Amino acid sequence: MTKNIDIQKKKFNTKKLGIISLEIFAIILLIIFFFPFFLVIINSAKSVSEITLTPLAFPTDWGNIYYNFVEILGRNNVDYFRSFFNSVFITTLSVLAIGILSAMAAWVLVRTKTKYSFWVFMFFLAGMVIPFQVVMLPLTSLLQTLKEVTGIPFKDTYHGVILAYVGFGAPLSIFLFHGFIKSIPMDIEEAAIIDGCTKAQVFFKIILPILKPIFVTLVVLNGMWIWNDYLLPVLMIGLGGDVKTLPLSVANLVGNFDKEWGLILTSVLMAALPILILFFFAQKHIIKGMTSGAIK
Image 1 (cartoon, rainbow, N blue to C red):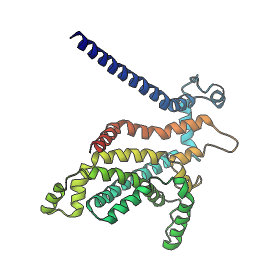
Image 2: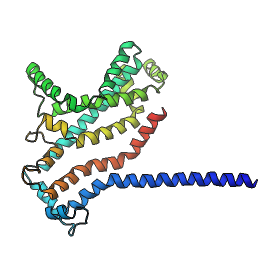
Image 3: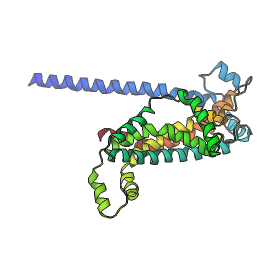
Image 4: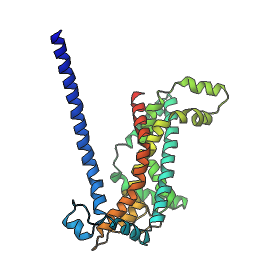
């Protein structure tokens, strides 16, 4: 009896030690990931000399952040409100288009049992392993060719940027939707068809509501990527384009010979806050969507 008690105590202590180790590891990761954001916050309220000499020290006057906000809102080269609207517009339409179109494509690929559907799915998966840098120049050439053929400009336009985001965001979304939809019983769809539903009604009234957890997860993940993306907008719009997003506006504060680091870091903070708020309120949906997809 005494030996059994000692063994149980050892197991309990070992388990407790493992939990404590994981908690310490999680705290260390939290500090590592939060540290860059911490640097942005404290240096947003400093002058250029303070940032250069004491980047890790707290600012002497936190009120400088307010003056930097006012300065940024009044800068014509930043045009914050218009850039903010452009980012919201492009991000919203892109994530909705990626979510709905990818869900439709994944549903058709799952329910269509042919060798062609398998290879089409493999074709989409191939898009996940191709780096964006590899297709930068071909993308520019393709957009120019499309303009010559159709007469519709795709560079420096809303629809051009959104179309590019849909193309680059669809492979991962289709992959996740594909695994989720395979767990949905076919009987549900057959019952809906017997009741008189069309294919479109089956998808939008039956399948899409079931996909809500993974759909919200992809909306947030794709939204964070598109909102913070710099490379694709600068390629398709440029720093002097009419359709500027927030990352491009922040880049306009960086001159060739003069870099106003206080304003740059404050503008980075202003650009990051909306997506951080979105992530804060949607984090439970992200976790739920990930765990649901993993279990299913």
